[in-house]
Length: 116
Length: 112
Image 1 (cartoon, rainbow over the protein chains, first blue to last red):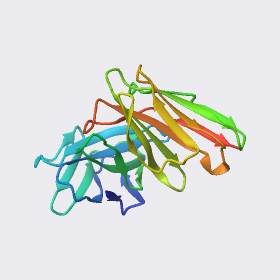
Image 2: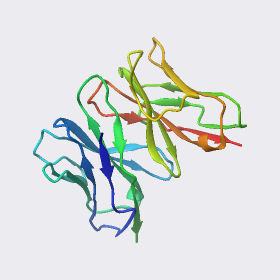
Image 3: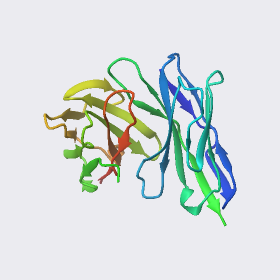
Image 4: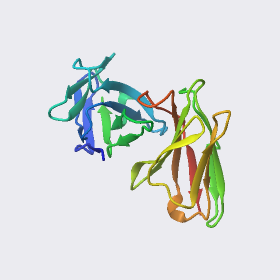
C-alpha cells in the first residue's frame, strides 16, 4: 500500500518570496509517479506538476519546481516569486504505474497562505 | 477547464434517498475515477473504470455503485444516503494507467 505524508498543515509566504512544501511517501514499487495538485477556494483540483520516478531530473513548470529525492522518498514543491493567486490547499499524491489499475493516493494537504 | 464535466454541480437531498452523479471524461480518455472529499477524511479514492470495465476499487461503500458506459461517460449512484455522505464528489479521467489524472469541478452533495 502507498502512503503519502504532508507534515505541514499550514504554511505562509510573503508575496514575491519562495516557499517549499514538504511531502514524503512510502511505496515498495520501483515504478511510480508523483504529483502536486492545487485546490483553490473554488475547490477545483488543478494539476501543478508531475514527476516520473525513473527520471533523475527534477520537474519544473514555470515558477513551480520539485526536489525529488528517491532514496529518501521525498518530493517537495518549491514555489518561487509567490503570488496571491498561489494561495490554496496543496496536495501531494503518488500513483503506481503497474498492472491495469492506477489510482492517486493523496496526502492530507498543506494550506498555503500568501501575504502582502 | 480540465475538460472533465460533472453534473450536477450542487445537490441537496434527504437521508434515505438515492442520487446519481454523472461524469463525462476528457475527449480521448478511457479511464474514469471517482473520489470523495469530505472535511474530515481528505480525498478518498472510490473506484476506477477503464474502457467500461472496473479496474480498481477503493473505500467505496456497498450503498454506492458506479458504471462506465460504452460512450465512456460514467455514473456514480449513491443510495440510502446518510448525513455522513455529504461531501464533494470528484470525477477524474486519464488516457490510461500511468497517465496524468485530470479532475472535474466536482459535485457538491448535501444530505439533510
